[in-house]
Length: 266
View (tube, rainbow, N blue to C red):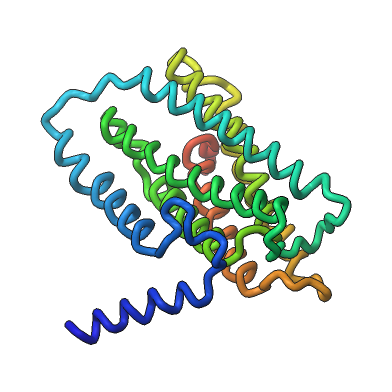
């Protein structure tokens, strides 16, 4: 037992020694444990406790809560995109293949850091998606793709916010937040008017998500090739396989959902 406690203590010390000191006072950023506990609680609820609790109960009517949640997510994502353009993309020093982390304590550097944290926190809010599915007894939407996507994006977002708050990852954050503006707008419409669940353009939303991973993947490869960039390439190297895996998962979902099998004549 003492060995385990010592290992956990050493792990916490290593994090604090190597993390960006500027984020330690932000909510959920003091250590890894709040996020890890949140993830464990999320998985436990959506995979075991929630379904067990709802098994012999009627679905909760929480449409108004979900609509408010969707609107909040839309405006949250719009704000993240706006701030990304203000702080990064419209900056005169911007380079497509290299965005280095601003490690200074200038007001602008702190604004960038705060927006990275906001993006991480938006991933915390995203977990409510699955909670609502469980409470509304929409078991068909609680898929491996859905749970894996929310879990891993939250986990990686915490790592980025804790160790690498800014820089090259701003590209993925901007693209992802832009997609979320469209996605949560659609979710709002499906609650307001359920007939939109069968809208002809629904499949294009999944195509948009696929395009997202293609764009961010290509950008990642270009960033890996940059020779005069101090942004840690190890982080990009870890993120690229994850990007490709998410593309595969979404492509599999797209094929099963929207591509009709062709009848072959013998």
